[in-house]
Image (cartoon, rainbow, N blue to C red):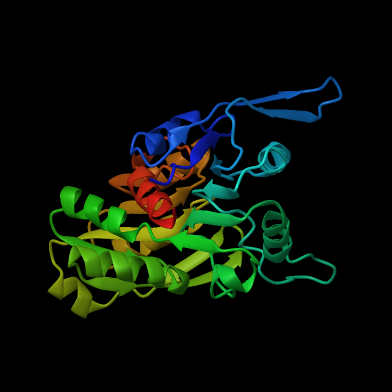
Length: 299
């Protein structure tokens, strides 16, 4: 029988890693991370890993404070003879910067992918924000698997919304919204977004009389992968309100809304939920079953 991977949680991610370990796809490992007086990280793996597969769990939301410790942990595992070192990160950062938007800018998605590829043997993540990059294999030189959270989102919608209308707030959201609609057996509507600035957004496409008449009594469920400032969510909710729809429910994969943005969005939504890829008050959908099944299947 092949030994299960050893799962190490980076500091701050013990609870999420514990939910993953509860699915019995891993053996629990202990990791110590502290700092020298100069502020430099020091990592110690307290569980032997020689000849073992190692999974390092770290959701890389707000990645800069975490990257040094993560990379040192990967290097320590390799130095101690781990057979394979995998990064499990429910949120994969830097994917938004997939081109140089201005002269002199680095393409962060590719730089980050090179960095991770040099330190790990494989990557497991959930719904990375891929737009102009078609697939992770286009930028990673190691196996990089992107799991889709749509089945979990659809389960939540089916259990909590009686007559849902799945709504994508813009064209980029179609890939997530369409799959949630298919799995939940609900109709789909995709709106159009015009972004003039970070929080200067107009959304249109909800003011169709045919939609309103055909779906009278339906509850719009706005589905998107990332909520940062909340501008797109608010603009989409306002477009739906102008068309005569009820206040929507929001279902987000990666929620980054701060307290002010959450309060602003909350004024336009009857409910707002997210996966636990990023620790947030709206977390209601656990990714652990999805990650555990994939981790066990990949061996």
